[in-house]
Image 1: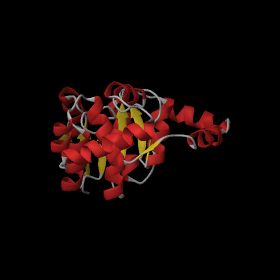
Image 2: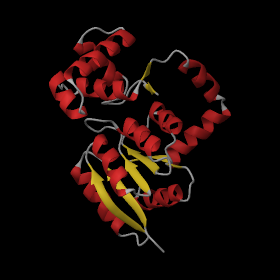
Image 3: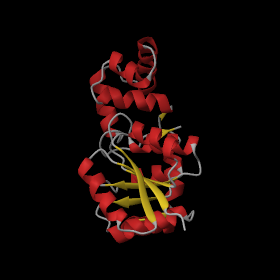
Image 4: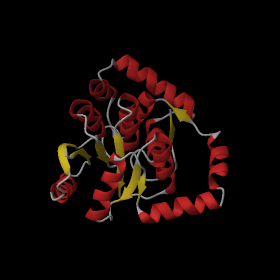
Length: 226
């Protein structure tokens, strides 16, 4: 039987090394690559075609949620498991909407992580027990109806706008952003102006605060992407 191929995406080398050691002990799982940024995760997934991607959320250049969206758009058969230190409901909701296979918190044991990978590979969804309980409780309380109503007023950003907003929040100048994304400085400036107009925020500090609050860099309010 062929092993389940896995790509690890986390910006901390020590975390990736630890995960690789844990998963290498599983006879039916093979780690085929590692990514330290969301952008690298997208590129390596396209190149290596792993069966499952284990993805962190808070990563530089491109956050894990947007990386997940881009991967599933390009390679819908790929199964993605979010493995994050943040268990916020807003992140979990976003993951479900994006079509990821599940969500595990980093306190998860090696046994649970391996099980999550196997279940994802089978086409099933898998969540850490604490998250699964919250999801069940919300269903029982008809949470999703209220959540759907609240999202009608959410600001919607395109994939490119999310990328540029994250780079702005990371302190990248327009020239650096253009080089990173392979576009012209004029195009970056145009996207920046669209962001400011759409969000009604007209300075870099304000955009940075919004990105942090929206969870692009750290946990906070949900950002809806399309």
